[in-house]
Image (tube, rainbow, N blue to C red; front, side, top):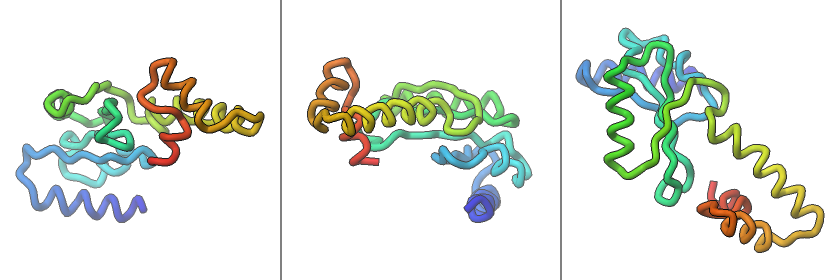
Length: 141
């Protein structure tokens, strides 16, 4: 899939103005590796929307080693414009959100195996203040 992503980014670069940002929503591919094939990798950043994007408020903006200040500032402004809660993170496996969700989902599954119902698990999470419970989230992503 990485080769295809690089092909797509090369085509985007060839067919857009030099000041156009080139963003990716990936959370499983190294964005620095994708950007490395471009003539101008400073245009590249990650914009990781969480599913379902119409419900989840978080937008992780991912800086690469070559992302320009202009690229990052524009990405943050774009997120604010669409009413997302933006955070800037580094380019690492899973970024912040997916690194946090894995143990959260794992614990939810363990509690389910120990006898709690899906409804009880989700109610506990929403009562705590989460936008939705881990089981409902799992159904949507």
